Length: 152
Length: 152
Image (cartoon, rainbow over all chains, first blue to last red; front, top):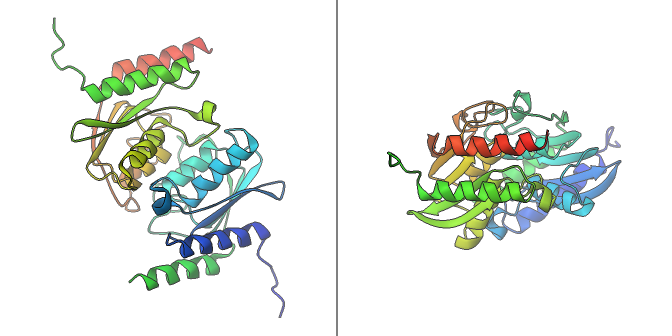
């Protein structure tokens, strides 16, 4: 039976980036920035490789997109990420003025969008992206489960 | 009359970094990472210069400290910053395992430590620094007031 709702291409790419992160020994999370449907930048977790606690997939992708476009505001750009962003990344998404956020799996233990800090719901948050969740959730969660099962 | 409680040297350096940011046309916020009382790295706001919405003083200082020490965990290090960190920076401080956070002025409109997201107070936050606030508050707030008054 054909897939009744095929996964959008940017989320496929984010999943591929997550897989690449796992192969490099990093927690498998990937992100993609698009503008008008075209890919501007991709990012994957690089904490260990780069010795950088801020190098989550979302931050890597946002910084790369800003560098590619020569701006510090990604107005009109969308971010696709395999896992619910943490508070740090939600803050970065707000600062970058991302228009739409698509995330795959929810993260009750570390998320900062629909759990915990709920960064976008605070009056201190000066920009809120439009929010979509659950796209590619199964594949994203399976990558994470596989990664942590191997290390236990 | 001598100052009854002189400002600790790292906060003086953070204020100097904030002043340098203002001179470069950036919002005047500065940060310093110390370990056992010695300066490991400093940072100042670089959003505009670097086209990087994540380049807040805290993130710049944390990334520089990690690069200097060759690690992604600043265990045993302290962070001194002139303004209450936003949610993004509070998240980065937690990820970096900063031991003590000293901030100058509170930021009711944008802060994420003692206002809004209150990142460290959430169960999703896996590391909480010891917290000190108000050191250098007057000087830090005056720098910000002066900067925004000039631009109005």
